[in-house]
Amino acid sequence: TPARSYARLRLEMLRAERDEVLRARDAGEAPHEVLQHVLAALDIEESLIDRTTKDDLEERMDELAPRQSAEACEHLASLRDVPEARTPDGCEECLRDESTWVHLRICMECGHVGCCDSSPHKHATAHFRESGHPVMRSFERGEAWRWCFADEVVG
Image 1 (cartoon, rainbow, N blue to C red):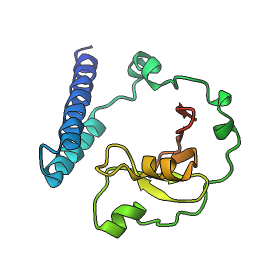
Image 2: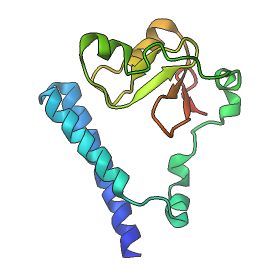
Image 3: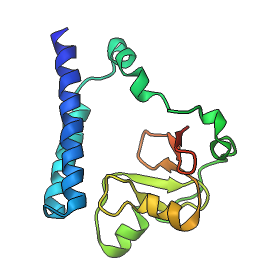
Image 4: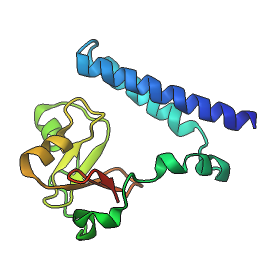
């Protein structure tokens, strides 16, 4: 349908726009505050596009599926309950440094809350590199997916 075609094309455009904003951020080409507002606007627009129809989900199945089976990851298979967040109000380092974040992640081993790789400082990934704790979980309301940094698997 035309609506489905529009939604598909607009989502592709949003992905390309987000990639360009992240490239500009990483290259230091624009002020952080401006890029943060642009990313927020992209997130809002993407959330307004209805992607929940059966046909849309079927078209996106390859994109949504993990690259590797989560059962093949010993780290995800051995998960226990989500630990208590050390800083439930936000990214531990961003709160300390009075910085901002895009999305939050929680370490499944120690409860460290860090910001995602779309955030300027990528504290969740930095925590993995420093601690070796392989699994984090989304710390966003309504999301329960997990990521193993060691095996690069969604679970």
